[in-house]
Length: 120
Image (tube, rainbow, N blue to C red; front, side, top):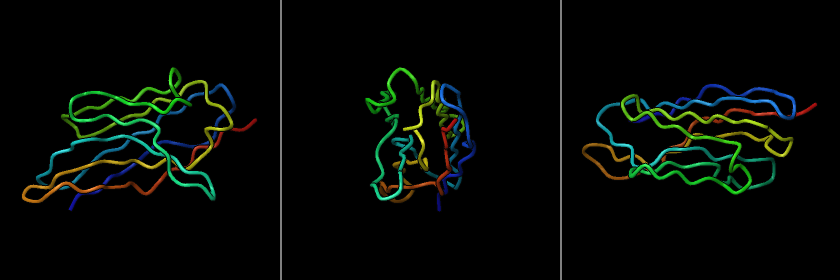
């Protein structure tokens, strides 16, 4: 069994910064992709940033130049540094990963979600 555990989030004023971290725990697995989605009430989850197994990171247009995703393979963690935050960044942020268990096959995994609120 694999679990994603998130930390970080909270409230900040516009223009401020926050950092989200997510770690995968369990036994015998390979992470093929890892990153973050976000969701606001009444809307579907949308991709914020994803790092795939080849090291390519994809960002949503809305966060390019402001958010940075870092992946530390040795610790099975990702960190999302969010700068110049805007009120429209307010959402619940979910860690996401595509993980292959050994033995097993690829599956999608989600963290429990963490609230980010940007407000003056």
